[in-house]
Image (cartoon, rainbow, N blue to C red; front, side, top):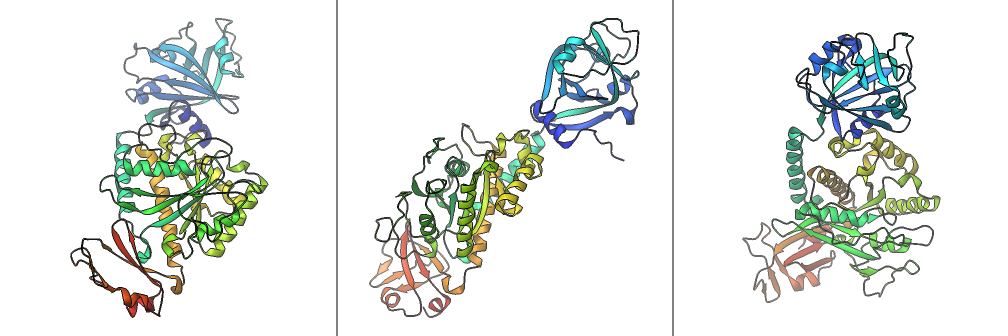
Length: 506
């Protein structure tokens, strides 16, 4: 039968966080391995740093022993701690040998902390008890030798080995997963090749982290931290233009199969991005660098208005971005606006997800938790709250830690960013797959080379792809069965055919 700790999950997380993000392995439990100082020493010898947790009738306290037990006489730095209501109090007491604080031979009356497991008691100085804010359940023993000492009866004692959450083995796993995610995204192709690049629209309140998320994604693929999109904490927001960001892969300098669209922040009532502009963005009518005006949406005829947008111009996935620390404090007006936008998205058939930023700033969360972040209690509580208040499915709520102040990339952060991005691409595929046939566009692409236009024909060089298509301009113009368009983008020609009949008769 496995030996388990008496600590609650939250208590264990607080203790792990208190001492720099550690993973605990239970080595000793007094009620199982006997109340014996010698047994503690045997089980904890050469185990590295350890945490000793002591349970009295009214308190949970203990000691963090920074180095491994090696020799009876060797002194080890010790930090005492105690659980309070919302925090952990600490008290440094210097260095002691295991034989001293475990009372292996005799009690040292000058020590600030003595654990006598055989006698089921702890002796501590009064001022140490006060620093730790212990209630100090005093035993009825009359042979206390010093008035400045207190004897506390104990009911249980546990000792844990402390290891870094991101040890060598974990880092190797992270590196492998990092490579796998990068490969998956770089090699991703939208459903049935209906478009060349997926368009992902970022929506959310001012300061939620929309622009920072784009910067973070670009940083991962460029191999260094970048800050192309301006970010800030001004209440009015920094992004007041519609920006369409295509990211190039650092290794091969080709555009990745997605575009991130950044927008003005959502505001309460008539402030921020207006509803009409959102609808125009969704349908592909607004081009890059359009200057938003909260009081006046874009209208046909504007220089940034796209009259006849293609499927490639439309939004294929919408991401609602919220700061994980403030999402529960959204105003009634903001929540009403978000629900209104969701109704429009459902009407348009566009898949949408939630992205919670700043997960690293949550209490008790360390970088070591990023490996399995969705199992962490503080994160699970936030996801449940968003699910309850805004109605999003739990599986549609993603979390990330953006690059905001770092100078170097961190693989464990990259995992969250890449995992979230992959979920967005999958959501976009769901949208494309659900399109009715009459709105489906087939896209064929072929590389541009010199002299590819011969008379009234575009000739596809046979060595560049498998299509070997010859597209006759006059034939395209006179086609009656569907809308066909030839476009040139980044040195490549793309033919968009708006239904299967048009393709079959080409």
